[in-house]
Image (cartoon, rainbow, N blue to C red; front, side):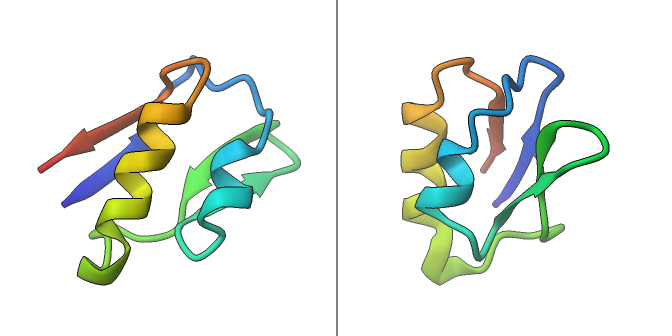
Length: 63
């Protein structure tokens, strides 16, 4: 599974709080970034949850 943050990111950092192992806030770009090219299997469910809960719908998942 892969995840990416789109330009719709509002920078509210909800995904960072929910799953800091995968998401990190970039202070220069003022948006979240994905720290892994491929999401570790044990974190896939929490990344799906972050995508569902993203108010800007800025997290795209490629299964």
